[in-house]
Image (cartoon, rainbow, N blue to C red; front, side):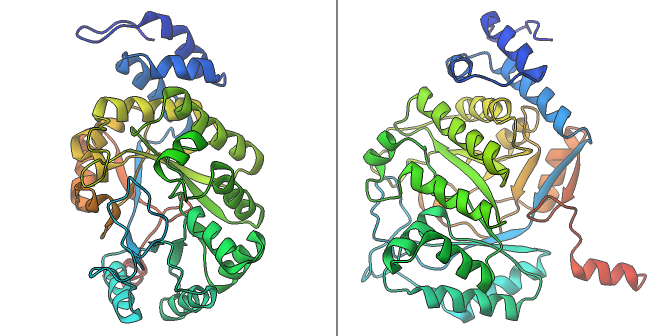
Length: 376
């Protein structure tokens, strides 16, 4: 299966590892580290694609339409790698008004969207009732809207800032309308890395505990990894291991999304992980995370060609059409594409592009359903 291809970098020592994983054996940490030090991307990518076909035998690539709304950019965490946040009093600091939010959500629905991804900075001026009222308002104004909001970092902040048990915070947010939780703020789940790049942010254990409690309450969440800053390959594997262990325990993650650190406008301008590292890391994630059904492409950071190539190396989902994105854009990266372009990427490789909801069920926009019923 892993015969040498002309023009490729050959690393036959990894072929037995890949054969075992493709056959269904769980990838060990030591073998995963070995793969991270290999440059035989074609062999790793072919193995990842074989696992992808085993999990998703239909020639389908999925996507979702949503909007990433940052309700505030005011934050007290001072993460050294973040170009997005502002301090209270800065000229461009903001908290979005409901009229601003209404316009953004209406535009999302008009574009065929089904959900809102909403995240913000850690703003000490907003109380928990503000968040609860916001969620209730969104659900009342937009019935059927899926609210995918508040990263574990934000929820840990709510717990500490409001002096409430974590489970109570999550129960109150869920009762007000929160449907699922994004995986933002994970970065690398190694406290050595976190102490260096974001010492005031949640610990790795805190991030995982938010997800654990959310899963226990019946909520689904996504998992992420931002890599290519100061972590070692062993720490990347540590990150994947901790996700796999929690997924074994709860089964609550819907998908894994990884992306490369974007250095522009940050103090880490000399740090750069390129397309090769992105493809290798994503393919290894598909091999290692054997209990995750879905792996998303990060075309927002990688652009169209690399995102399309990732569909041949283990990725089965193109993520969000993303009508708005501000955090990565603040770091100088701003790839945006239309549904037609995503469909072309898929079709070029023999895939059908299919819209989904957050839970990876086929999604048809209500307007399209009404038109079909009326025979339009």
